[in-house]
Length: 389
Ligand SMILES: [Zn+2]
Image (cartoon, rainbow, N blue to C red; front, top):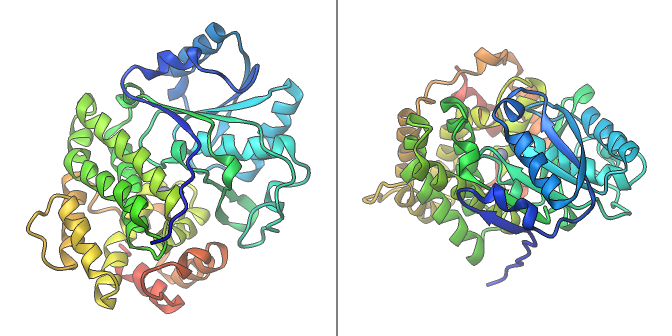
């Protein structure tokens, strides 16, 4: 039994925890606050509350508010230039996964020369080692999706080449993360479902890959159980505090799965879609391909016992076959109203499926190597075809 465990993030979890930000030992004197280009972080009062906390802590700040739902490299570079100009010495990502992921990329580029893609591995990235430590990162989450508050990963799209690639290493873990489910009460139902399934897949992928281990299994099964228990309730009634807290915890645990195991090629296959179609929410893309993806492994007979474990964790207590997991997944998608998402609604053309298969393998090929069974390019095309509507 081998595993490496390293999650160096101080996490404040629970209702009302944002109010404790000012008591913390902040990692600098001036924050670059990174938020999305949308209105909600401001209109819900979250930005003002974070600014108030920084004021109480005696820290100053500058706000960078350009991040798109699928963050792009251009904004990582712009944010880093802005942070340098403002003299910021730490970065605070406030919002969903995109704002916090972008904060991580910006933190790297404030202290390092060249282009962000110099340090990214995969696709046209040069994969150089990062010479200087990034600025310290603080994460304040307002959604329950990517788990980025408890992992080192950041996902960015290079716009001109349609490459959407994950990056991260030991120094891109946040030093401090605040997960306050009260900040998630305003997330609309559909987004709650997309993000909840993203969290679920971080755990289900991490549970079936070759990198799964004794520690990641504990986080994964508990996260899957919490999603099975409470995601539908959080989608149906956004004001349900208990359901929001369960899904928030599932998301943080799923980030820990990403830190101790890994995503599988389901994420490579989705990134290829949203790299070309920036309007496609990451979670929605994952949902679209998920049934065909897990059915592939059922047919390959690659991880039957683990599929049964996951079906039971999702709530199918009498699960006896691997296919019971796919059925449990389908039932949860129906309950959350996301069982009929269509690729065609996002401009994905059925003639292009091989293009996405090639992109997935070229940009995020590493994840295919840890899948429980080999998936060829033709298999990828078939998974897309079976998922296409
Ligand atoms: Zn994801």
